[in-house]
Image 1: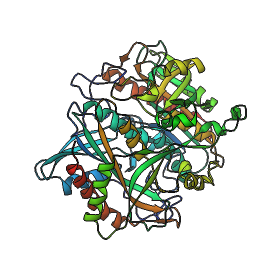
Image 2 (image 1 turned 135 degrees about the horizontal axis):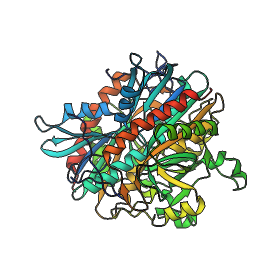
Image 3 (image 1 turned 180 degrees about the vertical axis):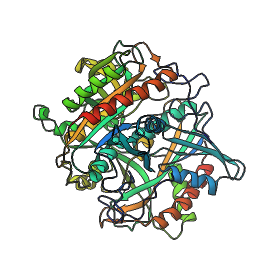
Image 4 (image 1 turned 135 degrees about the vertical axis):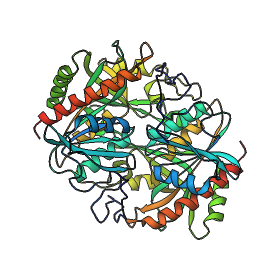
Amino acid sequence: MTNTKVGNATNANFPVDDDGVVYHLGVARDGLAPRVLTVGDYGRAEKLRDKLLDANTKVTTTQHRGFHIHTGTYKGVRVSIVSIGMGTPMMDFLVREGRFVGVGPMAIVRYGTCGSLRDVPVGSLAIAKDCVLIRRNPDHWHPAAAAAGDVKPYDISLPWEGDSELISKLTDAFKTEIPDRKVIVGTNATADSFYSSQGRQDSNFDDHNQDLIDQILKRYPEASTLEMESFQLYHMAARSIAVPIKAAAATIILANRIDNTFLDNDTKVKLEVEGGRACLEALIKIDL
Amino acid sequence: MTNTKVGNATNANFPVDDDGVVYHLGVARDGLAPRVLTVGDYGRAEKLRDKLLDANTKVTTTQHRGFHIHTGTYKGVRVSIVSIGMGTPMMDFLVREGRFVGVGPMAIVRYGTCGSLRDVPVGSLAIAKDCVLIRRNPDHWHPAAAAAGDVKPYDISLPWEGDSELISKLTDAFKTEIPDRKVIVGTNATADSFYSSQGRQDSNFDDHNQDLIDQILKRYPEASTLEMESFQLYHMAARSIAVPIKAAAATIILANRIDNTFLDNDTKVKLEVEGGRACLEALIKIDL
């Protein structure tokens, strides 16, 4: 398919073109199924479309501005598989514009990759019962910060929970679809950087983050994973006041931040498809 | 070109594979030129490569994880044109991993699109002398927030400046290359959402942002533009303690938030190329 070209928009508050196409997602009303599986990696979304959606139902409706939307049916139920790239702003676009074009109640499951803060091997799977947000506070480094008082380099937010029923169905589906893998359920910490606000040490920058992981674990002993998107899904779903959004998030543990190991690519590819199937199972079983 | 496939990484702190390829940008040492022009839109980067880089020097070295890197020469000087998608986390990847694979001092110019807070027409151009960051603080909405005291819904940061010499060269280049357009120099406000933290009104969510633009203008009367990436470039360039990074940022004013107008697509396309040429002119004139 060719890229969707969004035409001229006419409203700076919420840009939509004459065909009702939202500016970033590139789809119009009902251009997203009410049941959405979202991943970060563009290749992963294509793989899941090719391997999991019912034959002759698959259509890629947009590849625009970093959002690729593939819609079809899974066991006869309409679903969209959406890759969004990385970062909370990209998840924000999906939830905002997805809600704008969505029809009726929605369920969104994120399936991504993460680093682990627990003593579980890479290649295990994690489900977020809730998420906290770790944000770098740039004022800490500013020459005027002294005047502003003691500004901490990183802010750790209060937790937001996902939808308990969807999380329960997702946990069951993971255990059924991938019985040979460990599945942990805990708190996810979503960070606004892969580096500084996840406690990675980088001698090129002065990040003041040596004790950040300890701080996170002290405040949230159930913190299990670090990644870059899930918090925004849980928080925005909870703030959807007009029409309900049920949210759940799971991740492949790609890196272990305790023993500094990284999952091999072949195992990751295998888990992408097996876990993707589990997410679709949960999505078609939830009542909207 | 086919997508770069990054192989097995072995270090969870800073994932790099056996060939020295960084995990997200998908390039190894010196895989990025010391002079970088970065844009958000993938199509814009390809257009600038095709129209502006010297013939027979163009190579697309990676399209991976939302980063597309095109390297070649402009008037004989090696430059990279990099599209990064949207959001501060994506800019953070570019600066972090770009610095990791970069050789020696670097200059990075961002050329993007923005909304305007000033009474200038859409299709004008803006250059950021400094940037502030607008972050949504989710604790404001949390049931436990009352216990935590008065938590504001949005945090507005202190300003970080770009490189004055590069900004000066960029301003000159814009006036020379696009003499028929208004060019304004002011403060950019980078937001962690296109919606809530830019003061857009969305009845699907309770954003508590009705007076946010007024607050920004009250604190920073020179605030001219709203977008999603430039702050991270200026802040991280300023915190690059090992090797210097000179940073500057310019934007096409796509939306006017005062009179609620939106630029037509044809004019945007024309300004993308003219402004891109101005950015490359500034990049090759700066001493590293």
